[in-house]
Image (cartoon, rainbow over all chains, first blue to last red):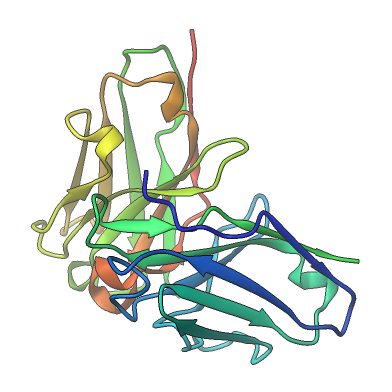
Length: 111
Length: 121
């Protein structure tokens, strides 16, 4: 299927900042500002942490921020904390063959 | 509080059928599109299907077209996923999710805990 591309893993020490990229095409990330980011801890419901590229839902830490350049969106986690250790997925509406596409997922490890 | 509760998962043989349900509460259900998303063991999230708030605007990922049917009952605040002719590759945790800002193309803002589907002989 038309999954968006993310690095398999990213790691950092507590207090550091990390950035996760999400690469798509002009039919999804490049063409629309409907990029979301989700945090998933195993056994729990996925959680929306960013939407419309840069916006944070109420209650989500300001340590999470987003940006987009061309066909690539990015999630930055500042001041890394142990609780940030989870799987992170980007997602976007797509005019390609599928209606909605998720990224391949990035495992964040706090060293 | 917005809540989504999936049910209906289980173990089924290849070629079999299951009907998943997602009971919701805490919001005006008919104002929101709903989606099903799955997570297979060792793989990433995969969007499966979405349905508009009025029951129109239905979309499926290619691998389930012709086999899965999404529907909703706005009187029961429940969305369903009828899964027929199941394949081993359909084995996954299935999540129900509410559409962000009411429309499926924006993404999902609230998710359930999921229900597990295992297709095996």
